[in-house]
Structure formats: C-alpha cells, structure tokens
Amino acid sequence: MQWSACREGRITMGEHAELAVLLRAAYAHLPEFFGGVRTWSYVRPEARVMGRDGEGPAAHAGVLRRFLQVDGTDQLTAVVGLVAVRPGLQRQGVGLALLDRVRAFLGELAVPFGILMCAEHHVAFYERGGWRRLSPRRSVYSPDDTTEPRPFVDEITRTTLVLPVTEKDWPDGEIHWNGATV
Ligand SMILES: CC(C)(COP(=O)(O)OP(=O)(O)OC[C@H]1O[C@@H](n2cnc3c(N)ncnc32)[C@H](O)[C@@H]1OP(=O)(O)O)[C@@H](O)C(=O)NCCC(=O)NCCS
Image 1 (tube, rainbow, N blue to C red):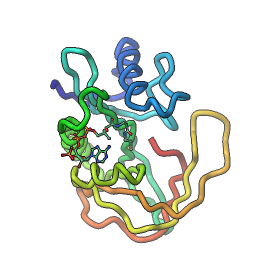
Image 2: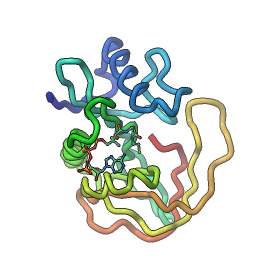
Image 3: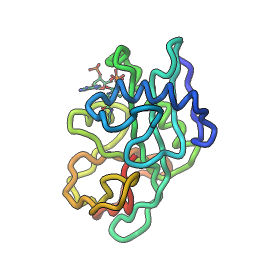
C-alpha cells in the first residue's frame, strides 16, 4: 500500500473519479452520495489521507479543520470522516493502518484534537485506533452543508470520538459544530 496525504486543491479530476468508486463501494448504504465523481457527503474536506494499491485507491479519510464551540469556547479540531476501505480488503488491518496515517497527518497539522461521529458498531474500530469515546453530551450540528440550509440536529450524542493530538483532555460541555460533519 502506498500512503499519501493530499490537500484538496491538488486532487486531480481523475483521482476524484477513482475515489468516488471507492466511496460508492464502501458506502453502498448511502447511494445518494458519490454518484458520478462526487467524493464528499455533508461537507467537502480540505485534505485526504489515502492508501493506494495496484487496483487504485484502497483506503481513504477526509479531514477538515474547524472551530467547534465547546461549552461556549472555540475549540480547534480536525473533523475526520469519509473513512473507507475497499470492501474486498476490509477486516485485514487496512483500516487501522489508515487511522495510523490519519493520526500522523493530524500531528503534522498540529491540531489539538481530531473529532468524528460514527455508528455504534464502528466505535470499537476507532477505539482500537487510539480514539476516545466521549460521554453522552448535547451536540448541535448541521445535517448537510451541501444543499440549502436545513434545521440543525440537536441531540444527545453517544458516539462522538476524539483523538488527542497536541492536547490530552477534550473539554466538557455541549458541542456546537456550527456546520456539518465530514
Ligand atoms: C470501518 C472500516 C473503515 C474499517 O476498515 P477495516 O480495514 O475493515 O478495519 P480493520 O481490518 O483495520 O479492523 C480493525 C479492527 O476494528 C474493528 N472493526 C473493524 N470493522 C468492524 C466492524 N464492521 N464491526 C465491528 N468491529 C469492526 C475490529 O476490532 C477489527 O479487528 P478484527 O478484525 O481483528 O476484529 C471499513 O469497514 C469500511 O470502509 N466500512 C464502510 C464505510 C464506513 O462505514 N466507514 C465508517 C464511517 S464512520
């Protein structure tokens, strides 16, 4: 596997087309995204961590730095999403290798934390990759920043995970994303 981290502006149209194939296959349960050459869902990332093998892109994660408000205070974070491994390669450790690369990239960005929200059945995967599950707390976030404004989701989230990068302890308090997850 050849790994790279690439800023969004440097990704070619050909690479978007290839990545869309990977994301379409990995997120077959979200057919509304990744049709054609689209390579993001709720918001466009600013960078991507990718693994390639002889068949093309095999692993991918999107990254977007943003200030979330935590208990009213701006907290810089790198939002991580679009985490995907080609279906035929899953459960062979590629996902954990991807999370290692994501951690290294966030280290290069020198952000205090990574953050993501995921389904309950993916929590164990991220925890094995060094992410920490936050205790249940109120989160307010946009469902989708790619179309017209819609009411924000306001809920108690139980599957928000953070990755300590340059700081250790995620602050307590409700999280206002003021935007969508990646
Ligand atoms: C989630 C995903 C990236 C994991 O990649 P992967 O290459 O299969 O992960 P790994 O093989 O490195 O898994 C490492 C460990 O994570 C856990 N894990 C991974 N996938 C899991 C799953 N579907 N259910 C439960 N545990 C899982 C296991 O503990 C696994 O170790 P094990 O295989 O020895 O039991 C991959 O399944 C995927 O692309 N899914 C579709 C897209 C998606 O839903 N992404 C997550 C969005 S939040």
